[in-house]
Length: 166
Image 1: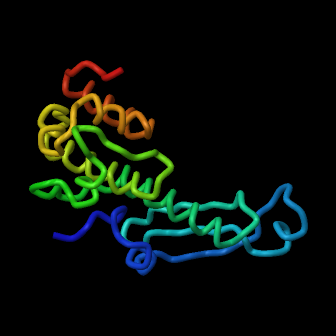
Image 2 (image 1 turned 30 degrees about the vertical axis):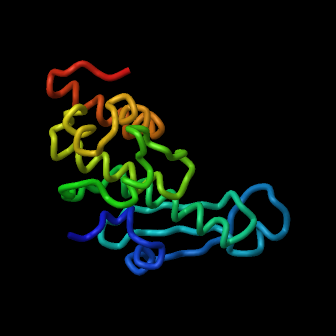
């Protein structure tokens, strides 16, 4: 089965994207106002966009835009879940604990995997944590690291008549 777009390598993901460069406005000196350092990435298959313009370097903005794109893909694109956790998940989940910082490049891939399994298990946290080999507390902690994912889960839980998570 193919990988979730958020989990693809940088090169593979960029082949599915259009890249635009523009000048950033605001403070930052001559370089910011005269050089096209802002980066806008559009994932062509989904139309999801991400941009970055806060850095003075185009390459730094490209990396930030790529991270934001991966995060948006993780949040907005659902993909059929695998039968068992990915190798990345296994490397990041030890002793039932998920070891990842929300700013780390692996975070969007791990988040997408959780959200895909949650969707297939109809937002059942216990079933999802059993499949992924972590505690429900760790699962909720990971989801809280991305407030948009946590809010979306709670919204779905409410529509199913379940209490929201805190």
